[in-house]
Amino acid sequence: MIGRLTLLALCCTVVSCSSNEDQEQSFYTDVMATNDVWRLPLIEPYQLITAYCCEGWNCGPGSALDKDFGFAHSSDSINVENGLILIHTRDSGPAWFALDIQTKQKHAFEDRRELNAFTTERGFPLSLQYTRTVFERWRSTGQLPWARSVLSRP
Image (tube, rainbow, N blue to C red; front, side, top):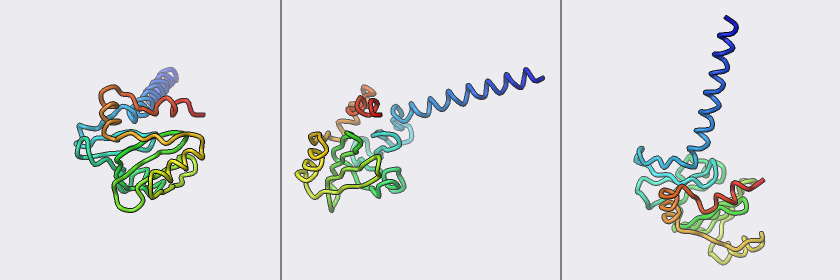
């Protein structure tokens, strides 16, 4: 009887571990198109979503970006670099943002020049890519432009 309970416990542990791996992988692979919502992962747990493939990318109220940064804007251009999520939006108000993943601080800028000075001060040039282009590339290849730098971070 004890042997069977041990075997059952071992099987449950293996199943729970493998399902956790699937959940982690699905963040970077699941497009969610079957739910009539398309998603674009930035860096876990942050993502953009749209109901209009492939326009109108935003994070939405209640999302991780909204909870951690108070950021609920649309995204025209994006990048993830050096621990920052960089976003350009066409919404009213400040249109350029740097969201610091570690400190959970939102830095807002009125123009590209200010954001460029901010990234230059941190040792890297400003580089943004159209959100739609990033999504289309990710959907067809499974690759995000910033994946290498995100996966190699300490």
